[in-house]
Structure formats: structure tokens, C-alpha cells
Image (cartoon, rainbow, N blue to C red; front, side, top):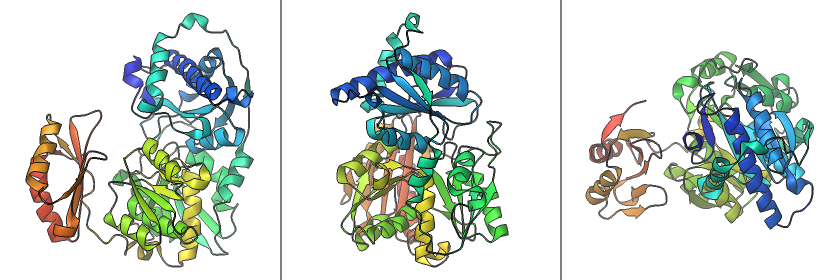
Length: 469
């Protein structure tokens, strides 16, 4: 059962099978064992060094899973601070604000309502992934003895940190007296709680800001549309609202509000790599020489514009575990991922949907022109978008790609295979393996449309059967 719910970056599955309260207790016990051990190794014997903060999202199963998770944490020797119904980045903030040994958010992010799960973080909100502790938690959980349930060593308290969280996010907002109208789709998820608590009802906490709210009701734990803003069809209602309200731009959050997508004033979808380039330029204006981390699927324009703005571009493997680690290691000022995660040095190197919106308001006010005009020069190269191919022999397909298209190309294996012929032939691509399915994922970019078509005609026959979903 545990093997079905432990993933590469978190724990997730359908409720109540295979993920139920028994699993929640085991996860809590395993997390407490690991996080307290790390805290002791760091020499932290303070009360907070033995405390783990816990939050949960609005799913129907979240309260009961949280309760059993907390019992497991207590039985594992930890004390617990319950921060309540919050977005996932709130937990990252709480860990650092309180100095806890770690934290757990009960959430299944963008998955449908029948799913739930746990996102675990260690000290300083550093992520716990398969290679950085999750495998050990699974091992401890699998061998834990339920008969020790109730042997509580720590204590639980509830803590309301919304005022402190709001103050933290507000540090990133400066609209310079401008008036900005934003349409926000909360996807019936945790942004429906976070946005009013932080930015105020209708944007009332920030002078000049107006927020038109869409799908903010999360009381039923259900979704009008899938809470995944990466799927274009999930943005249709937001696009319509932006145009109807003559908003400056629109923002759609995912289920646990750690990711967002943007649409411009015309309803056009803004690529998260293009948004990364825009926000990087904003940060680099006052942080010359700083590094900016971006995921390797991003447009060439991201690297070029970071350098043009006086920054150091740092390519990263896909995934928040790698993005956060690269940002911290390089002391980068900012990072952006194609999935809609945005990371900030002044947010403990962690991602935050709330801060992404705050920074976007500030950068937009400073730019002084429509969002479509801001993005147009950044979106200068045609992109394929991510295309999936079904193939049993993934290694064979990658070898064929290298053999037939690799001559004279710059090739690296940071994440899958990146084959760069941009300087010579005007195109490049990255092909990555799916961790869970017999799929290869292609992202290709070219200097113009004709080159794009030629490159796709060469590459796609080598990768298997195209899957459109």
C-alpha cells in the first residue's frame, strides 16, 4: 500500500484506497523520526527543534488525514503546531518563521477531489524528495508498529499566523500608486482562502488594486474545473472574465496555491518561462550579477534576457526539489519553472503563489505598459509545447535521437537529453522520460516557424507514438 502512494516528490493517492488514515499515521511517525533525527544532528535541542508544523487544504478528507498524521508525529516524539486551513507556501513560511524541525501540508495539489496526500519539508522548508529523505520515511513507515499508537511524547497546539504571513507577502508589493485590475481564478482551491486573507477582499488591502474573484468558494472541497492551470481548457473562464472586466491581466492558481499561470489583457496565455524572463529582469534591475534559476525546458529567450539584464542564468533539472536546491546553492535572487512554480531568495529560497502575485503586481506597475506588450518581445521564438510520445524502449528512442540528430550538436544529460542545434541550425530540444508511464516528453523550440516544422519532422518519428491529452 505504501509503495503506491510514495512518489518522487511527495506522497499522494486516492482516498480512502490506497491512502487512508492508517497510512497518514505511518507517514507522521516516519516523518517525525527523520526530521527529529536531522534536527538533533544539526545540534538543535530547543523545543522548536522538536516541533513540526502541519497545515491542510480544503479537501473533504484532509481533516481526518491531518488528525492521524498529527498522532503519528506525536507518537514519533515530535510536538505539533497546527496552522490550520492554509496554502502550501504558508507551511514553508511557518517552518522558517517559527524555526521548526520541518512541516507537512496535507494536500493533493492539482489532483481531482478524490485524491489527497502529504508534502513534507525539513528545516528551513527544504524539500523532502525520494533521494532526500522520502525513501527513508517510507522505510520507517513500513516497519512502524501501530501498537505504539497513543504513546504521545509531545504536545499539540493551534497557531494562527495569518497576520505574520500577510506581512511577509506584503514586503514584495509596491504598486507605486498605480491602479491595477486583476482577475483571479482560485480554482475552488486554497487561493480562495489565501487571496482574501493576504490581499484583502477584492484587493482591499492594497491601495489601487482591484481583484475580480472567480471560483473562490472552497467550502465543498470540489472543483468547477480541474485545479491545474497548466491545462489550457482550465483557463477559459478566466480568459473570458479578463476581457469582460477589462482587467490588466488574470491569474489562475492551482489547488494548493503554490503555482500560478497568467493570461494577458487580451486573454492570451503567458508562458511561465516568458513570465520568468520578465520577473528576472525586474529583480536584476536592483540585483546586478545575481543568478536566476530556470528549468531547462524554458525558452532560449530566458537565458538571453537574464544575461542582457546583467544576471547569471542557471539551468536546472525539472522539479521543485532541484530548483530550490540550485537557488540556494547559487544564492540566486529568483527562479522560475515552466510548471508555474516561482522561487524567491527572500522567501527562504522557496516557491510561493502569493509572492509570485505580489511581485507580478510590482513588476507590472513598474513596466508601465500592457502585459501583452511586455511579453511579446520575450516570446520571440516558436515553441512546440510539451508533446508526449508513447514508447516501450525509451532508451532506444533517445539513442536514435542522438544518432540521427546529434552530429555537431551540443548535447547534455542534465535532465533527459538536451540536443542544442540553435546556433547552427536554429533549433533545440529536450526529451525527458516519464517516471511513471512509458512516455517520452518532448519540448522543442526554433528561431522561426519553418525551422520548427522541419525540426519536428526530423525528431518526432524517432520518439514513438504521439499521445495527445
